[in-house]
Length: 300
Ligand SMILES: Nc1ncnc2c1ncn2[C@@H]1O[C@H](COP(=O)(O)OP(=O)(O)OP(=O)(O)O)[C@@H](O)[C@H]1O
Ligand SMILES: O=P(O)(O)OC[C@H]1O[C@H](OP(=O)(O)OP(=O)(O)O)[C@H](O)[C@@H]1O
Image (cartoon, rainbow, N blue to C red; front, side):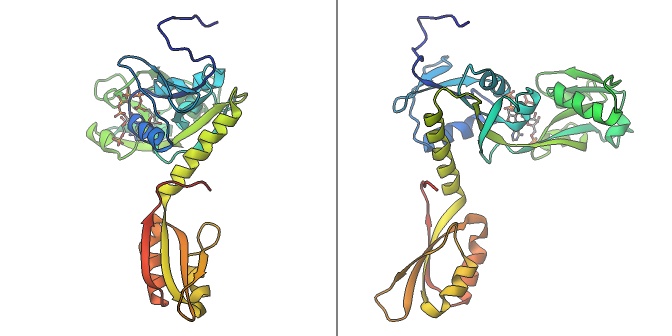
């Protein structure tokens, strides 16, 4: 049952879209919302913001709770990490609409460098501290091969890396991206439980399936636009086949005739990470006037 609070905005006809209210995913979520054309005005200390140009209300929640709200249908759509979906045991109750390419890191078992614990087997039966109790217990059950694990798994809500130094734990399970936090705490990784990134998820019986699909398409358009550039060049028609072999594009290059006998102009999408190499090769096989244009947005 939900209780009506008259100071809250009316969200009854709106799709509820949960986004992290702080932390590692917050800035990238806000920039994604802006890029997909979602405009909103969030009042200070309010965790619900009405979107002005779509029938959506944004709900700002802790990233670690979003999978549960989406799974239970209290919100329709959400952005959170795969790690949180798995830890919340929500993977069978949410549908993954698209991966978002940010919030990439690993959930790793870590132990003090100056300890005898060099493999996860060495930590069997010892004290582990983590914010990911379910995934940790699951992992130790696998290595202990029993339902009754002897390893003691204790929850802390943050700064997990401090637990060994302070004597609360023999090892920890925590997220690692650059590894700076782990190294600064004198720890090293001895096993990986999960590789994670952010995902857009929806409830299995969404109340607004068409709107959720529009959001998915907008997000995928922006992610593609961020990944690719548009490369344009001129080439003699007899070099076209080789050039298309070098840069075949997502579907196929667009080829138009130039007002000069035997020459064509080509437009093709190229992944940014391959661009420099492809430009070198195109130049080598006779392409001229190679231009590269940013893609602001697209639909694929
Ligand atoms: N170092 C990191 N690099 C990339 N992604 C991360 C990193 N740390 C966490 N994440 C991702 O962001 C999610 C939220 O983590 P975060 O540490 O921001 O949690 P929080 O508890 O909500 O915020 P806070 O730490 O401010 O209390 C994680 O579950 C993970 O998916
Ligand atoms: O490998 P790194 O790049 O150093 O990142 C890893 C750290 O980032 C996360 O914590 P965060 O800094 O978000 O704060 P928290 O410990 O309060 O969760 C995670 O829990 C690690 O502590």
